[in-house]
Image (tube, rainbow, N blue to C red; front, side, top):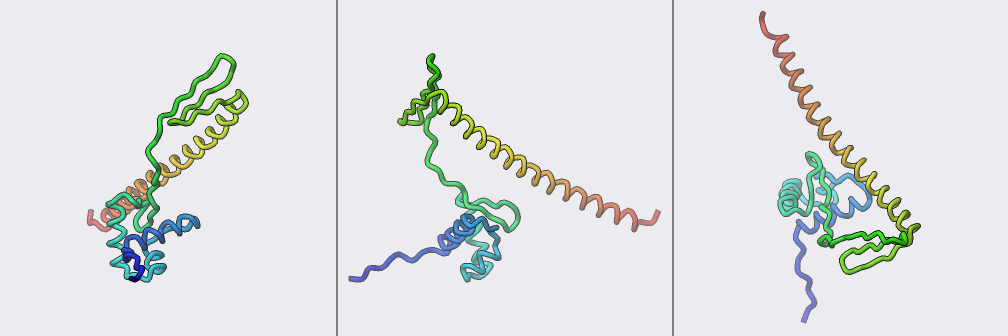
Amino acid sequence: MTNTKPARSTAEDIFEAIQGLQVREQIVTRETLAEMTGLKQSIVDDRLAHLVDNGRIHRVQRGVFVPAVQHRPARAISRTLCPDGTTVLEVGDDVLHLSPSESRMLGEVMAGSSQQYAAIEIGHESARVNAVLAGQVSEVRRELRQLQGADW
């Protein structure tokens, strides 16, 4: 009896390559994936479309991809402030009793994460607005060329 593993799909190979590049903070492009996997560009494109359709990756811009974040379902979170200054933090079934100092430290840690999130979102929105403006500038230039070439 032989011990055989089921054949891996090309989509799984590409997804694994995307994750590997992302971990190394490399930009994931169609061309890079074709080179890494040795697959034809048409196959890479087809598998990327499949992975996008199934929510496993996101298209950041044309030809650039990132893996979708896969987290377990969020748990209920509650915070209780006690008269003695302690904080009871409940995350799902886990309960933490925090001293006032620990609560402040946790707040500082979370504030940093919040600021990072805000900065990332501002960057994404700036990139989106920049793309829209670049398209509008291109359109205005095209119209200007047409007007300059027209006989008045």
